Image (spheres, rainbow, N blue to C red):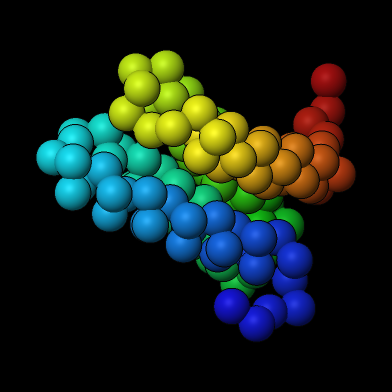
Length: 119
């Protein structure tokens, strides 16, 4: 994806890697976990894309928040697949590093865009 938004580009590339991993899992007849991983891993970028079209700061923050939560869920499924030995350690760790990078970027964005509520 050729895009000026680095987060969107990184999340798109990550989604492609998740799709490729899903294909391998499906070939090994691991359907349930692969579907969960595919849904969570590809929705990160979709929510970031929606955030780019947000009509307000609150809308933007809400979409980034959803993308952040999806990245956490993706890391859960990757850890589960790694620890159950459905995927190789090196593949899992590489994807976990990328998911963690996305999570950190989104968390930083959330910290800077969250509207402060009066106490």
